[in-house]
Length: 456
Image 1 (tube, rainbow, N blue to C red):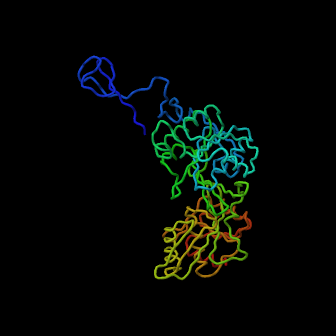
Image 2 (tube, one colour):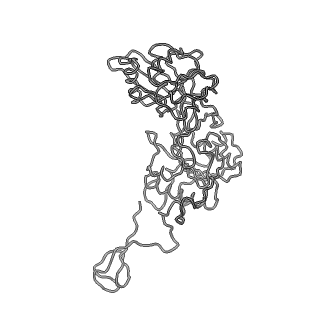
Image 3 (cartoon, rainbow, N blue to C red):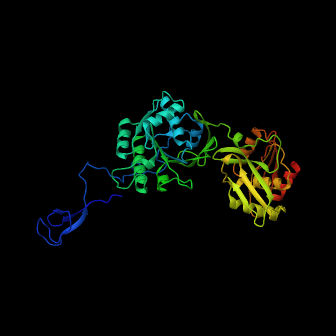
């Protein structure tokens, strides 16, 4: 970061010198020069370290008037779900994802919908020219879009445009290309990214414009740049999915105005990204008849219950059998195999075990344990689970089946989609029966295996 300029002031006469001297050149006094920081003239520079939010008087919580936050829907239902209902005035959103995943496409569609709804918009592009953005809009079918485009990377010019145009929402694509003249480091460096993000966040809070920052990601998939960037913004979204697949997931990692871990599901088409209203259809099997090693899990993504097919393949292994999982925790798979052997008598010691969550979804919640164990047992024995079978529940090291949060909503979602048999933790068993759904409530892993066998 640029170093503040130092000068030397005399304590006797107040004279200054550009370098330290033993004797003041003005009053000839000895040892009176003291190092100080040169202050710019009043009104010529703003404090770079001003607070991101305006200062307010000290008040008790009961005295502060709490009002609902006004939101502007983007016109894309799945994006609104992830944001918590829409765009918030003065909110700052950081969205990251792999190159080519569809970040610019999604944001351009959202800006066009907001512009048509009457909100002034601004698209600041630092990686493409205005002509390239126009070509993308033509491909998306936005031939007569009125979205304003600014091809600029200098922070000071961007801030001046925001102050002059006062858009309701502005997109900065991307924050790694923006630089400030106050710093000598190159664009994309930690200092530049942090400084530019702080200035843009301050502009959003003071001017009321919502700002969306597009961020690059590292090879590990994390947002590039300092982690403090995630703390400064209000919402952090991750674009997930395989570029070779037509489906994309947008996940909220942080959201001050909505639920965390909420996801939106999109399908990439020739006309851009389209929201998928029933994502369970993507992740469910397309088998005409039940096959061994397949079990449907009712998982919870944010506030949305979603059905995902868990597939397992157990095959003869060599001296060192492999344990591989895609979309699930590999270490947890090894633990579950030990629990299955000790508490249910199902051994896979000399078998290769492969587990996959269909559709490229990543499942982090422990409620997937029971479905994984039932899929492994089904593959090992070569016996398929019955059609319309679902399961969920956390499995402990003592062999107990622990309850999953919001079990009633999971069961209602399964019944709505036509599933007829469910193996769930006893604590998640509903007090009133759910029409069309036979529920097997279990306490331990061996009971779950027995219930699976009885259902088959």
